[in-house]
Image 1 (cartoon, rainbow, N blue to C red):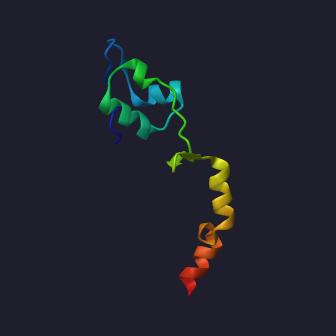
Image 2 (image 1 turned 45 degrees about the horizontal axis):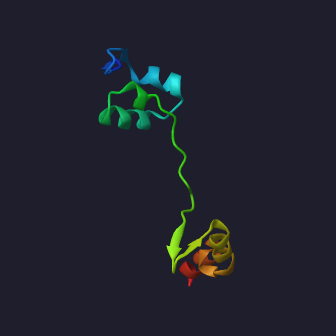
Length: 91
């Protein structure tokens, strides 16, 4: 026997389930559960997922290291290569 879906009451008085929010937003269930535990505001709940940067910019000696420099380091340093690290594990 399946449990009935929990109904959440939002700040504006509307009642929704997690499945309703998934259909409207297309977000994962875990994302919606996290948002519901932190806020009942419809504005925050239905907000789009923000994109995160894969590579961050670091300041070193007052110079900004760009993504091109990070790629250069990954290409020239062998320990960033996955096969190289696998070879080291085998030794």
